[in-house]
Image (tube, protein in one colour):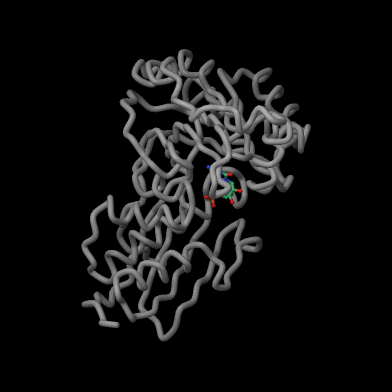
Length: 312
Ligand code: C5P
């Protein structure tokens, strides 16, 4: 292996969470993944991923959710750094530290975000100069939605979610996320979706994005977007955790324009009219005690990007 030219200054990358405005699940493919059509939006709940040259490969995680994130070689951010090193022929190990703010295992792609952040940070640290497209190719090896966390904004994902196409979206949308304590694993939710559909699953065709959702995004009007929010995994998530159905109903009663389970759950995303409505809904949902935490956010925002080093 060759050693790449290395900049010794640590690099920090800020990376967003995502919500799926639409998630259409098609048939199971030969590789076991489902064909998807999804519309991602990046929202301003962020993790900061810092990479610094070190004697050996290692990682650490801080923040409110850090206790349930693995810090061994299975950590997705560390795997991303090692994958890029192997692909680019770099032999300078790094320590990856993640300051987490994105909910863990919530259906908001927190682990994928950290992987995306590590790829972008290592590309800069090692002065590799890779294009976004090249980084997105490595990202796809790490998980279906990792490429989107590099790109950000609003985009359609097809294939297993990793093939991206831009979407023309106007304006900013206000979201409230109800983050629940109940565990739900992504493979378990896909399996429940298959079970609920029975034999119909493999008979389905590759799904296509809903054109009404696309024109709603062009309008920039949350009232028009709200009825188009749709997630084929939602029934499966509610079947496994019925309290999610109650949480959705509460948010709508408290004035949300629309609500949808985010990805494979258990986080529930509510679209609201403006920042005042977001504050009102956050207070109302927090008071019910039905969610571990309720957070407001805005989307779309940029994907993974280098930020100035933090002065602690
Ligand atoms: O790619 P990612 O790590 O997000 O996938 C986690 C799991 O979710 C997969 O192992 C698979 O069980 C399920 N999945 C799927 N079809 C997809 C994406 C994910 O079945 N398109």
